[in-house]
Amino acid sequence: MHLLSALLVLFSLSDGFSPNCPGRCSCDSEQSVQCYRVMEVPSGIPPTTKRLYISHSKIQHLQQSNFTRMLALEDFILLASGTESVENDTFKILNTLKTLELWKNKLRRVPRALPASLEVLKLNDNSIYVLHGSDFEGLKKLKVLELKNNLISSLSPSMLSSLVSLQSLMVDDNNIESVTGPFILPHLKHMSMENNKLHLISGGFFTSLQSLQFLSFSGNFLTKIPINLPKSLLSLKMERNQLKVVRFQDMIHLENLSHLYLSENLLSSIDGAQILANLTTLEVSQNQLQTLPFRLPVRLQKLDCSNNLIQKVTAQDFQDLPDLKHLFLDNNVVSLFEAGALQKCSQLSNLALEQNLLLSIPLRLPKTLARLDLKGNAIQDIAERELKDLKQLQVLNLRNNKISALDLKALECLPRLRHLYLDGNPWNCTCTLLRAREILKAKGTDVKGGRCAAPAEQQGESWMSSKKIMKQCEQHLHLTEKSKEVKKKPKSEESSSIKLIMDDDDYDYEID
Ligand SMILES: *[C@@H]1O[C@H](CO)[C@@H](O)[C@H](O)[C@H]1NC(C)=O
Ligand SMILES: *[C@@H]1O[C@H](CO)[C@@H](O)[C@H](O)[C@H]1NC(C)=O
Ligand SMILES: *[C@@H]1O[C@H](CO)[C@@H](O)[C@H](O)[C@H]1NC(C)=O
Ligand SMILES: *[C@@H]1O[C@H](CO)[C@@H](O)[C@H](O)[C@H]1NC(C)=O
Ligand SMILES: *[C@@H]1O[C@H](CO)[C@@H](O)[C@H](O)[C@H]1NC(C)=O
Figure 1 (tube, rainbow, N blue to C red):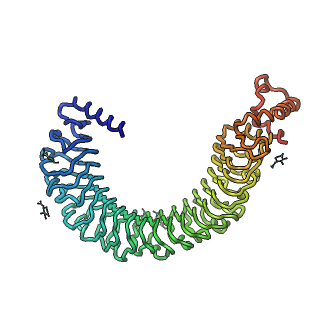
Figure 2: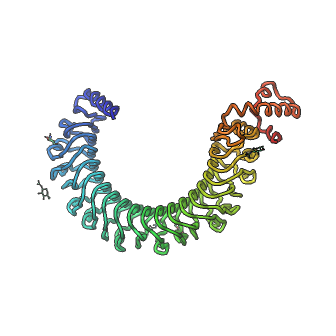
């Protein structure tokens, strides 16, 4: 904070040099002025100014006289300045004003008589508690209206009926309990009413919202997905509501819907989403699903079923998802993962299975995997056959399992591995494990190794960095190094003197 203040002071001092720029302001060019920590709208702002930005100031009241010499103004932004009231008609004279942003102030109502030229109005983070039809009268050009984080408790069509060009309406974080339709906003594309108190959306609400593409009702008390959603919809967010069932039949007309977010509801099963032929993302995290969704859409690219109660993963669940790239099944109770269950997902690159009950790494995972997360399961060992086809794998997380030994062959078959997480396992720090460490180091893999659980004298040692273990194994390693020299033709002086660094082809026959 002190640093910020110091910077701001510096800022304002340095501006004094620009002849027409008021104190505490900086005039980037003749047409853009920024002011900080002012006590009123500075007089002496150049009359050609098109953009005026004021923040962290103390301007309790705005009045018309403050703007009479700024008739070229197009954007006025007043941020975090404690503004409580705006005189009637303050902005009326600014007939080129396009953007008005009065964020983080203390306004209790929408300023009156806004100019008809306005295209963007943002009044987020104020204390506006009611909207009147007259507030937006004549704003035929307004495209963006944002009223997030205010105290509005209801929204009705008459309030917004003038806004014939409106494309985006954001009223998140208010106290809206009811909305009655129909809203006649033929160009509205984005509507967001997150974190309000909606229990029900009436059937007629959407009849005149024929351009709506992005709709969010996340964070309300809705028990049903609204019916009669507009056909134009691309994305629907219904997270953090009280949905118990989803009737995809009611959404059959949403032929372009590509993103559906249903996380944090009370869903115990999902069936029939395949009706949404163009759906690419489905998120159903934090519900009460005991099985994977049945009959998923064929175009699906991302499926998030994390934080549910899913017990098994079978080939049947995934037979028809050729485009799937991201699959999140973490934080479930998966104990059964059928071998080859994901074989038909020939694009899968990201598989999250952390925090489940798996006893081994699933067999025949897709060759396309780049990231595999198995943290927090009960896996006891790593076998070559589980990993040998994963030629694209870059990140493997096996943290917090029950693994005590590493199969060197299993590591060898992962040519692109860059990050390997092995900590939180009960490592048995034998000299073979130490050899694995050298192989991994030579490969350049970034490894989080963790600590030894056995043998007793190594307990608590970090096996990727411990000098103690290395000392004990030195003899062992040295001997094998010697024997190798006998078996193979001697290499150049240089390489044979570096005992712990081995070439790729050396360790094949070195394993005990
Ligand atoms: C601008 O408004 C303030 C109140 O915030 C007022 O005291 C001041 O006289 C006005 N300045 C001009 C130039 O009208
Ligand atoms: C401001 O305008 C409103 C309605 O347009 C009116 O009721 C109110 O009396 C006006 N206030 C002043 C101070 O003129
Ligand atoms: C669906 O998308 C296509 C392609 O963008 C578009 O031509 C069509 O009008 C859209 N359908 C609806 C109902 O909006
Ligand atoms: C949606 O799916 C239909 C039929 O499956 C197809 O004709 C249409 O082009 C798709 N729309 C988009 C935007 O992909
Ligand atoms: C650790 O490995 C050694 C050698 O393979 C074995 O004899 C020993 O029993 C293992 N210790 C534990 C606790 O598994």
